[in-house]
Image (cartoon, rainbow, N blue to C red):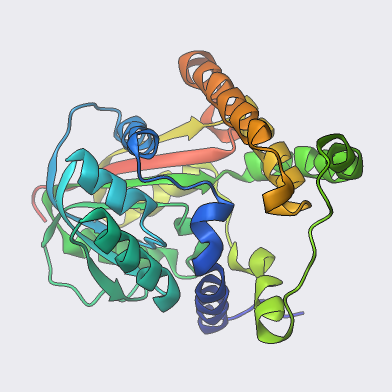
Length: 304
């Protein structure tokens, strides 16, 4: 079959994320408390390779339900934020969470390659798990450069690496194989698929919204070709990534309310322990390409 066009990719992304928005935070365990803030700040610091940074006006690309923007605002890392996404449903969820948390965020529905925003108007452009959804990456990076002030920073976290994405298939398949025994052990029933019609059809498009997996060299080239300097690519999550995919895959097969709370506590603390191993040992000595996630940071040239 012919490859989908850029417009088809954007349409699928918008429709899928509109439907997924209401359940997105629960599905991915997104938190806006102390733990969520600590996780987001740590990810941004790892991407930038620096601690203690503060930014004035920030722009999030593909903000989704607000995991990064809201947590960075609450942590005081950014003073103000504009959140963009191609999905109106995601932005509506973000706005609801912002009101509940008492945080102000401007939301703009926009394609990353056509930002309706002024030149040189942001100190930081950032995103989490978004670049791999974008059909026009050169166009998007050109827009990131245009809206950044001279010397402004770029930071993207959670982008799937080509090798890491392939490796992730191993724990997913293993988890599916043992899922019936796991459900019996926990006393959880198999998840019922009650969706029908358009919702079921759109949820089935989840695999189609991920259009890229990257090598570190690809990310460096994208940034440098659009006028960025001090480009840095690092890797994140190896053993913790495998552990996380096993747990998420198992959980996806069971009725959520029938999974015992102790399971979630064990899964969360196990992930944190393995994440510490990744951060303190493996990420320091192994090449970024083998990790599941890649983090990119760069600086807009001072001469514009």
